[in-house]
Image (cartoon, rainbow, N blue to C red; front, side):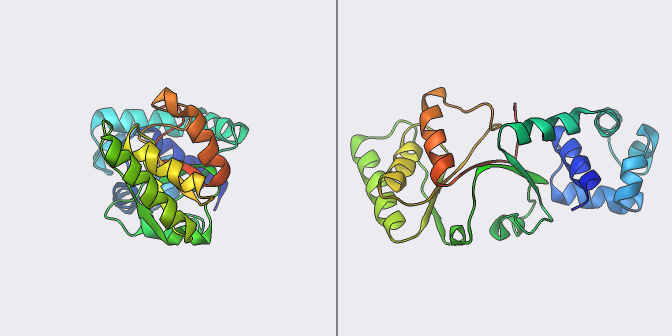
Length: 207
């Protein structure tokens, strides 16, 4: 992908208002990605159909260095930023109704992650629930199935831990940026997941 296109997608993503569907509608109205890069606030509002506030914010982001800084900080932290139209973007994610423009990945996704099961549940789980989540995750991971969860306390943590204990792969999909691991108590678990799977977020680094 052209470096400028990735930069533009990161800029749009920084608004927290654009998925692939909104992006494609916008560039269609403007006549292409190059037109987006050159558009004024007035053009984004009157031809792109954006609100005055969003048009002004997007103009500022497209013509500032904030997207470049975001990409540089990601590189420095060992985080890959993958746009929706790159081969490395997960194929299953690409076919949902409105995929994220970019995803931030720390760790490594592999072809075997196409065979995956999500295990999620209560943050305040019972002992039985935690035990069963870990057991299911461990047995599935031992058979080559990637375990996906959300790094939250409770069932999510038990699922990740079960997969790791079985020597399998696990992916954590975060509800915030990769430099803001929450809950903080799971920072160590996040490091283990990044070494044996991947941390993924659709949000800018410090969200």
